[in-house]
Image (cartoon, rainbow, N blue to C red; front, side, top):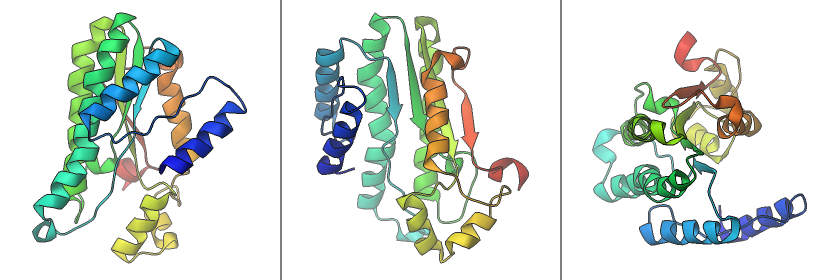
Length: 215
């Protein structure tokens, strides 16, 4: 999301609830995490929920993955999640409560050709979630991961182009006959952020139209 898009969303939220904040943030940079945590606690005193959702998606055969591309994707998809945990969990611990939702993927659960780079990052997120959940379970903080399949976003557009499969063909790869909708993912995140999921931590929540279970 660009800064302009972020400010646009901020204004939309403020029409519903004036207590909102937007901070420009590169998740791969530790100073940016320190700043966003500082600004958030300055405005709201505490942090109840962290959704580690920033990520990029690259499909490439193994011999074509150069080190710069590897480091860029890992910096966002893996280091970004680690830095979020490092700087937000101590704030949550002060209040003995909090919910963290880490965005992994079905690529972190199964192998797929061309997905070594992306799958490695999402597999790392999956296990980091479990490790952090074990470490903070006794401190009132729940940490779970979500594992979407293709959702109708720009990532699905990229996947269609990279795999040479049409949207209709991608839809057909799912037992439910379609890709997911962003609102379906947001409802899962809201569930995990709320007390409705108060007995869940270290768990994998798959939202993939049956792709990993039925196929």
